[in-house]
Amino acid sequence: MAIKKYPVMGQIRQVAYMTFVIQIGSAVFGLVTSVLLTHWFGPKQFGIYSYVLAITGIAGVMGGLGFSTLLLRQTATWKLTANWKSVKGLLLHSAILTLTASSVLGFLIWIIGLRLGHFHQNSGFKKDLLLAIILMVLTVESGLITSALQGLNKVVASLIPSSLGVPLFLLIFVSWIHWSSGLISISTVLDCQIGLTLILTIVQAAQFFRAVPREFFSTFIRIRFPAWLYNAAPFLVNGMFTTINLRADIFLLGVMKGPAAAGIYTAATRGALLLVLALSAIVTASQPTLATLYAQGEIAHLKQVLTMTSRLALLISLIGCTILIVLRRVLLGLLFGPAFTYGATALVILSVARVINASTGSLAPFLAMTNQAKILSISLGTEAILNVALNYLLIPIMGLNGSAIATGGSMALMNIVLASWVYRYRGYDVSFLGLRHRDKERVER
Image (cartoon, rainbow, N blue to C red; front, side, top):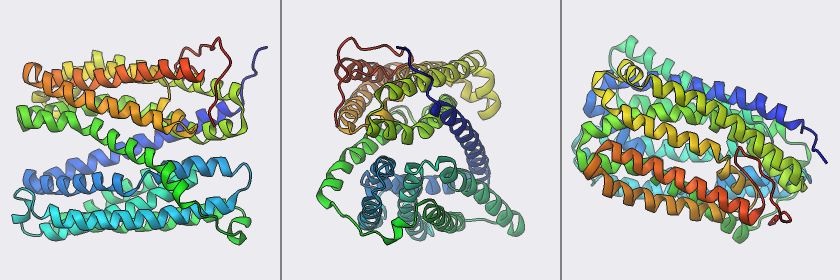
């Protein structure tokens, strides 16, 4: 019997479209801000600014303890049964634990960061590092509220202030400060980011309190400390592996071939990452729906949503990939300069890998939202090992093209393997094919 078209797909398309527009705006504002800061700071100061944000960004993933994704999934599930005491408990529980963990990590960064390299010899570095640590702690806490809002299916409402408002006002503020005084420092930019993140946290908290029913405020708090910490652990591991997969190629290429090769390769990765915006928007829009349908046991509808989102992501990625391949040298030269056209082949390799990634479907959110995060951890861990090993072997031989093959190849291979495994052992075809499993569907609770 044919399954009727599930009406939620229209909602997902609408939210995905709005999310895509927001992410495009965020990317544009962020790019313009980076370009301006590069010119105002110069290479040395911009390097320090990038360093303090990079080291605290990695710590932020660890300090989040994986609770952000867990909070999104559980809020979407508990909303169905009006289990607000668990929502209340998990939100409070995760806020306290992540605040403690990120603060401890911030202290360790303060101790270690002042002794790494020659950065500590620069005037004002201690203050810059301290401000970056404060920003990291606030960002972790703000991320929890964003996830809770998305769990309540307030996806667009959660993204407008964080992904659009903060980058826009940061651009406005730093531009105004520079043009009014003629000077701008790293600490000034970090001060602006801290202030905007603090305002963002307050705004999102107000949004959350308006979105929940009155019962949320009057109900008791339910705390399941060991269970929640255990359930969040795979998400923490996933975040760490994801960070390795995103950074290993640039790091190893810079070490083995120098900063020039790393810079050209980074420009190529920026072009390929444009293909991720559409998939990311669809993933963000569909995550609450996946968790809700799974909790309700709506397996047929869940499969339909997976197939439709995969096909939509693949179509958009194919169009974008075609444009990047045809205009690869023109775009790289126009946006970054003639020297960066040497990254054209790497851009092609990475773009094709991103299309393969889109064709295999929303694997990560599907596994995360259906209580199978451990499988995702194994996959991401294997990809990280393969990624680092191939980069180490291919970079000396093929340079930045070898790095692109290593990174894109490991990502594409693991996505294909994982999609095949999910189909064979879980009965879901997450890819754009939408195949039906011949055996009885297997659903793990």
